[in-house]
Length: 284
Length: 256
Image (cartoon, rainbow over all chains, first blue to last red; front, side, top):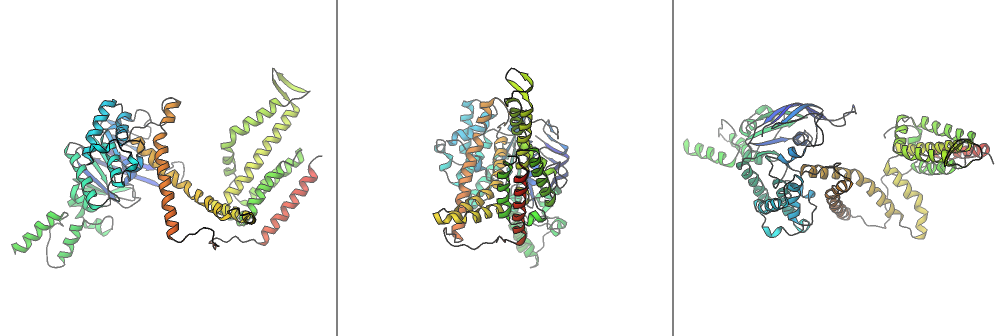
């Protein structure tokens, strides 16, 4: 499902002249089946952008195409279910959305809202609890008895259970330990391999370098750059303007440059970095 | 509402007490002259405050139906021997209309004066002044500082809970909850997925706050110094004198 923004502007509280601009004339395309990362400082409009994709927010002007579905300022609040079924959203600290008395019921909540029969929703819960790395013994527990990390996994299972074509992730790994973080990110990469489109908002540049196919940089309610992570992280102008920071490997490479190493393009992942270093040590 | 004028600069305790005092004396008015006098007083206070009049009209809006209901009830259900218009149990009379007008005036006066208080005084100033006013109750072991602390924490939590609610609503809408669709039962049911997470997170926020306060050495029942010190000045004395004058004129104008 391709997602296309056409000159989308969003201002908060449109009747107030002092209103903050959330998005200023944003146009972009998010390709089907890709893993797209959106980065930018706090308040740059990342969350506002993605909330338009499932019509939690509507544009003040412009339009968004999600597959066949068009969202404009006049879009009615009714009949949004098909859209929201297809666009799953994992919010920041999604564990705060849990409310049922068992994990199973909570995972079934989304699918049942979208009209999936109880039996199928139960199966989806069975399947998804495994996908997020918890065993089926967790299904009958209360979500409030779990640890923070486990609650996060249950919440993610609840979103995946509706089988959305596009999954939007708003800093899904904030506050997790490094191992948990990697497991969760690998889980989403796996979902992409199953044909889903992934949109990730993050402040972690290593996640961008390791997982994303495409990236967009937002600044002051606008998209200031987009392309492959490799190209964007090598855009000196963006770095000079302080719009983004580099992944660890690229920072390391920069330091090596001062010690007479040479990189045509900064390596952004550890494997790229080690290959380059090996070549330069043995090659000379 | 930020701003600067005589009313803004008054000690919040004076404003708070005068507002309640005024609401009390509104009930002393009982004829056209006294109501007109009180109206002039309120409009004068509004003028002095330099707050845009539109905000006062807006303050009326949430009370509109209550005012309308009360006024209509008074107008049609006041028993009278000289009805102007009569239909089954409904009676419209001169007395009824007069009483309805008085009730209407009372509403306007009380809403305007309390709007004036809330527009020119920050919530934290109000809670500070409640603490200061309640201070004498310490004699009977009333926990004044704790009550004031509860008040200011409650006020602090309002924007926090609004944020939290929007967040949770968004999350559940993304999972296919439709608010404002279907019958009454369905609509009430749609709020369960909001209320439970909201309860859970309020408790955890409250718990975090308690820990944070304790770790910064908060201990209850100790003599604490104040960051915002309320200062009683000459203009506060004059305001009280002025209010005494208003009361005397009011007592003179009302009929017995």
